[in-house]
Image (tube, rainbow, N blue to C red):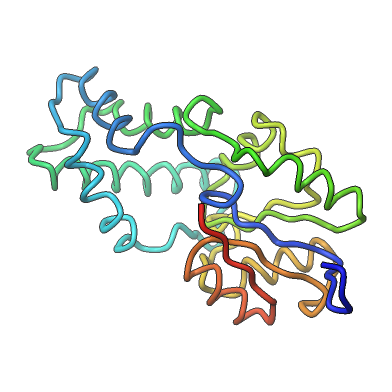
Length: 213
């Protein structure tokens, strides 16, 4: 970032770029299921989760905010959780509290880790005067989660797909972040880890850098 193309701002993906899970989704789902009397293999959940996650409708809800948005977000995740367990052999509806319990668990810092290089990069970028925003296909929980993980002080904005009403690779989350940073697309780069990051950034007119964790 020392040549003439040096950006004025960076849009950053969250999951897989800044933060990741300490344990696999399958390990956590299986452990919570066991507390409700369900026996499901972690490996089986890990096998089906990526496919079902990718096949699910976008985590995006136009026109909702506050409690109504939170209800829609939780319902989206509970449906995905139920689909995972059913694909692994569980028949019938989930215990009423299992899905909400998992939703609440992932709202805490406990299952998450900040990648070792992240704090140093954010600090240096912020000190250099770059405007920083997170753009994530996630929900409202991310705001408090970034606070708990002590990343929020370096961020100027956090944009989640659920609240914008569109998910990457749609360009709208990126456009919203640029609005909040008050920057044109030509003045910012996006850093992410997925094809959706690259496609969405390009659709929004952003230079994109993909990393591999």
